Length: 89
Image 1 (cartoon, rainbow, N blue to C red):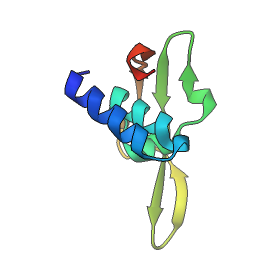
Image 2: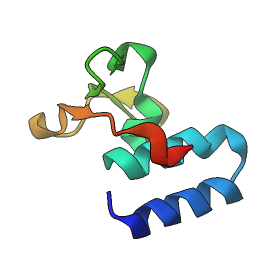
Image 3: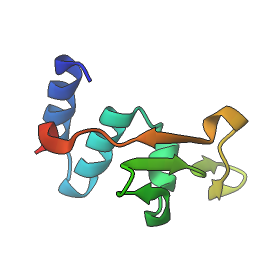
């Protein structure tokens, strides 16, 4: 990840409530979309292989409210490597 993006992510994470800090940093480091981040569950994280499986997302519509659904395209189902976390500390 480029240094400028790292600095922006850190700055943003310091300005928002602590409960969102992990989401901001994880999103900046992995490129996951907001719906994909909110759709993550523990079973999607593989610490042994340092990966995240994108299997679902959270969507919100006026008609259906907030709901869990699969990613929109087959290509959106993917395994994303977890970054080196030392820069996030």
